[in-house]
Amino acid sequence: MSDSSSGPKVSSPAANALIYVTLVCFLVLGIASGWRSHRNTGLFLKAIRSQSVLSLTLNFLAVNIGSGIFFSLPQVGTIAGITGVFAYAFASGAPLFIFAVLGPLFRKHNSKQWSMTAFIMERYGRPLHILYSLVCTLFVGMYLVSELTTIYSVYELLTPLNPLAPMIILCVVTTIYTAFGGVFASLMTDAIQCVLILVLLIVAAVVVGISVRPSKEDIDRVGLVKPTKMGGELFVILTLAIGFSVMYHQGFWQRTFASRNDRDLRWATFFGFWLVFIVAALVGMAGPLAAWAGTWSPDSGIPGSSAFFTLIASMDGWVSGLTVVLSTSLSCCAIDTCQSAMFASLYDMVEQKVNIWVVRAVVVVMNVPIIFLALRAPDILQVYLLADLLACATILPVLFGLIKRLNFLHWTDALVGCFGGIIAVGVFGQAYLGNAHDGWRLLLLEGGLYVEDERVLGAFCVAPLGSVVFTFFFAGLRMVVTRLLGRQQYSYINNIAESSDDDEPTTLEKERVSEKPPVTTASLSY
Image (cartoon, rainbow, N blue to C red; front, side, top):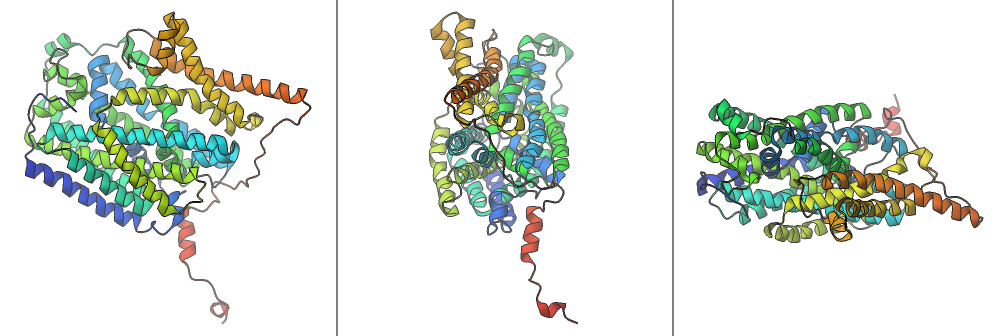
């Protein structure tokens, strides 16, 4: 599943101790965090308005990172250089500002809003609601497959253990405390885990900075410093790809609606962006640094995705051990977020009419095929690219429902717009590549992200534009036909009561109120 230029530097006893002690600590932390929410449906499902700026900032970092950053970010650095690293780092954090804008709009639409799927049900109805819920579940499932694949590779590279056992146990641990405490447990554990992750990353960065000091001659010989055309294109491609795809990740929406108020949300996204940017840039620089230090080279036979681990292999064994703990922590953050997001998507899809324990059981069972797929070692970047392109082509028509002036849009307009975005990519591909066969195969992005021409850049730019054109074209056509038939034009009316952002009580405040004993007549007498 992975390549390594040298044997693992962590012994079996040490690896077992590091992995399982870390997991036991997180299991205890998760159960303790979920103790408050496991019998409180509001906290378990929603945790609305329950998180402070600090907690939310750390959670925005948690939902953006996983052990996969040790593979994807350095690989970009080995291909597109420093420009590519900063493009990826910017694109990873920039989508948070979208939630700073959309979060207040959702609350204005419905002050008790707690998920994107709930909004779609209110605005567009059941058909689009089911479709969006299915796509959300598929997206989160792909995130889980990716995370399990990468943690498997980390254990395979850095330890002599069979990676299957610790990977499964890690998945079981996060499933236990997520099924027990729900969203609130995920929020609390992620905040604490991120503090540990930041400490470990700082230590690792200091150690690497002291141990690896390439000369100016090595840097000039290898390059990767000057701005590149590909690096510039990645700023656009990755920002669009990640920005649109996170709209389908319930973990981001859960954290958005968990903010106590709109001001806290704006500050959390601001601080979260910088945290994500700094962490991503630090990890991504391992790619160029490995090339400059000579631990990795294009002709070494080692893929660029393993550049980070060639750098770690050149250091003392305790650094590998530190990386094992760091990777385990990152995977716990990513997996528990995905599991709680998958639960929310499925529970929304059945309109919360099924027993909550049934949905919990379904999420647990779904881990089995996800683990199986992770063992098949899929090309994760290819899967992500397809998912990101699908998101670019389909999310804007849905978000138009937030704009009051567009209340004339029907769910069929949005649906046609979604398919239109996909069709637009095929049309662009045919025009750009000169033939229908290669043009429509652009939808599969078979050449990957790192191509010499602008086909990928064009695909990610055309997809959202095509969805907008098709949405309004079909809406206009529908309205003309409706008028010719003498029928009443459709117009969405929001009958949901709105309340002030500052006056709305938080989930925790509601919980405290519910815990107070009722006031009796006797207690008021003198």
